[in-house]
Image (cartoon, rainbow, N blue to C red; front, side):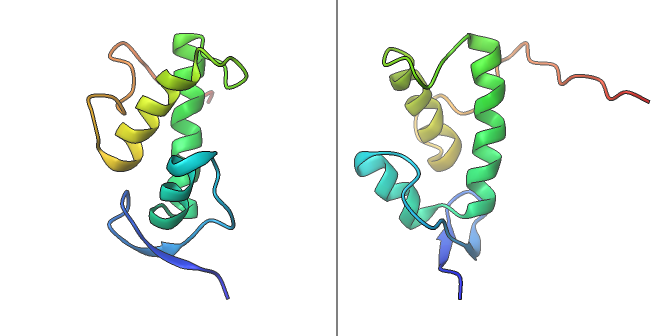
Length: 94
């Protein structure tokens, strides 16, 4: 039986993650309060941020910026979390 959490992003109960997806207290907070669906949404959002801002999860100097966006996206904390102002989704091929 999957673990259920009240997801702070979806604002409803949903299937939780299997383990903390990030190290430390933030990872534990995500594990306890964010659903699998919301985490997948964050990963898609993170991909845009990485591409637009040239960030890297392997670069220690990028991690504070990524964590600020993570807090904004997942918990609505701070001024980060939205897509870059000039972001335009790629057009779908017909």
